Amino acid sequence: MNSVNLAADAAHIVPLVILCGAACMILLGDAFVWRTSQDANPLLALLGIFGALAAVLQRTGPEAAGYGFAGTIATDTISVSSSIALLITGFLSVLLAWTYLKNRGLEHGEYYALLLFSVAGAMLMASANDLLVLFLGLEVLSFALYVMAGFARTEEKSEESSIKYFLLGAFASAFFLYGIALVYGATRTTQLDSILRILGQGAAITPMMLAGVALMLVGLAFKAAVIPFHQWTPDVYEGAPTSVTAYMAAGAKIGAFAAILRVFGALLPLEQFWLGAIQILAILTMVFGNLLAVTQTNVKRMLAYSSIAHAGYLLVAVAAMAHPVPGTSQPGPAHDLAIGASLFYLFAYTFMTLGAFGVLVYLSGRSRDYQNLGDLRGLARHDPLAAYSMLFFLLSLGGIPPTMGFMGKWQIFLAALKAHEIALAIVMALTSVIAVYYYLRIVWMMCFEEPREAAPAAPVARFGAGATVFLAAGTTVLFGVAPMLISSLTTVAR
Image (tube, rainbow, N blue to C red; front, side, top):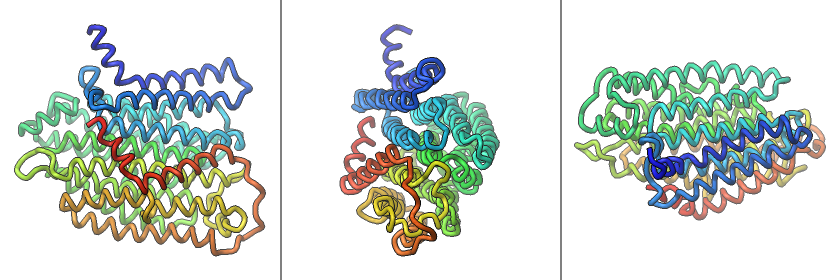
């Protein structure tokens, strides 16, 4: 390999190198240099994220699109858009954790290092053009999240959530890896573009190949928290520290769906075999995710089931993407619209979810989190700023115009109609009404019910959480009114 090729290959992974380098510096610095400084670690994490974001933005022109490392890493629409969303998620998550962890006695450099490693793993998933590289990114993301979920080691629920997540995640990873092995056995390659070419020629469509596709779908459905592979989600969201839950809800979802778009984009010639499964999973996830959310009295568990329902909406976009031109294996008329809609929705979901969890962190004190619905009763009386911020994020999650959440759902709805997925579009609309009900139930409790007890003392975790809420709210308004600002990001590297 000559120096020119090496430099071209390296350009594809510069953001990952920056993130991993910053994570290693945090570990070393926390151990040997700034042991007594609690602010050096999040500052260095933010510096690494900004450096990685600058490197990603350098590769947003059409001339930057291409492959590196013998075709295993891709720079394209999915990788660039997902990487930007993941880095924004990491940035807001660092702000959330900054004072929250300090106030809870959980301030350790390892947290920020793990967060950076997990962002790098998810970005690798989004950039992978090879199933083994995708699996590597999946494991980096997963192992970091397993540890972060159990970061509150003195709390039984946190330890329990970590163990559950690890055990079920290990099974899902095994399914995915076994699926890769079967796909390789059928096609003699793990590169996604090669798999697409082979399947497009009508070769390798065998029972072994179909079994491999099914196993990979199971593994990715677990990571995306799709029903019926969602069992870990409510317990892990409830037990993990709130700042971890916020990052997990957004970051893991982006990585999982970027991988789904990549893998099933390469499997378009087989859509007649897997499209039905995607449609069924989408309906189950939208219906039961929203219905189960209605029954919850814990805010974090309710947001967990809400995140499951949002995974169902994203599966609608995947189903719309799957329809080829009739009589061919070429992408159909809704393909590009569906990919753009799903990427836009991931951006919207990031800001909405981190904003909602940001309000919970903002309200948290040294010894308690705001978790139960009863804790939010009468919130508008003693903290109107927090109440109206939560109101705004809940309306956006419910898809009420002119918020970013509405624009995201509208784009997916249009993609479904263009792909003639009428049933999915109808279910999406009906379940969105159910979602509005349980979101407005919280709004009613905050604004129109009397608090159960006297107004609590001023919370302590304000700086980082307040900044997160402010940035998320402003962005949700901006991109709800002007969605083309994000839509341009989803096409710069096409």
